[in-house]
Length: 451
Image 1 (cartoon, rainbow, N blue to C red):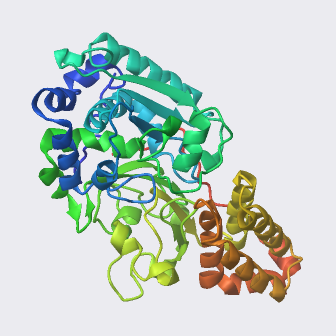
Image 2: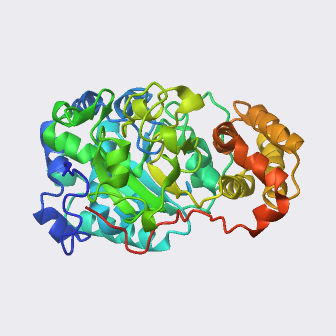
């Protein structure tokens, strides 16, 4: 079994409480960082670890921290992005629900490293149970002397606040999140300036994902170089994967980066194979916004290399024959799934969630949804497929934030790899309506499997 750094004690009764978390070694990273390390030392360990952002972009966390401006007399902020709105992704919610102190400890360590005395956890508005859990954990940590004034007698002060969002996917984009946190409509900002220079309330700010912040705890405890020994190449450490779709064991899994995609899908330790003895048809590896891969490119790349669960391997071949690890929203499609119907479902989501600020996204997502609806419901033409390709091409790269790209990439990949299925819908409109094609289930299961 692979090594577990974040979920090692997830099945220990009471691990969501301060007392049990502390008994299992919790808050040692806070003691080590605040008492024996300088803020720059912590940043350096995160750099050595090679930790990449776990929210989707995969940008090196330590490098992002090093960009933070440090003007005299100006406060700095750490903001945790717990908005987690990507269809197929539910690992942050799982972490906040079952082991909230891992996030709180990571917030303290990270805030200390960045010189932030006030930090925020921005959580998607629908996650009210998780918001209450985090507020309780913050209260427990504060009562034990790990938050507030003069933490552990070190002279370092820190307050952490939990802020509910408004349930908008766009607020997963860091500048839209900051706008929402300031009480405004969650529209992405034009950059520059970047948040590291002018973020929350115009002050230097770092925005990191829940899992990224929680990962700083084992990095401080064990050292960046030890953490970097896990994984391969520039994909170091462990990664939480939200596995759903047509598999036998949907749930949240912590993997060592570098295992093969084939092992993750078919091993009993993880997904346990395709459900009901069906064959694999396609895979969405990193949440709904990444390109879909057909079965022949899931376990092997176009160059014949084994496909691994790493940033580099999944993206091998670019978007022509590759995809992205993204947020780790791993959705498996079996042979009964309709690619057109699933792509239309994704397009409906992105049309609904576009903030409307950029014309290509505002208008283009609506066009894509309408054309896909037309094809799926037996009214499409061959020209519609070409029009759909043209619309997605004109959205990609032409918007302020990546939502436009996120909407365009799944459509492009679906046409690129499954054009014959689009054409079949056009040529067999009545039969396409009668066939019992499915829609993949990619919400989190009520009781996720964790191993």
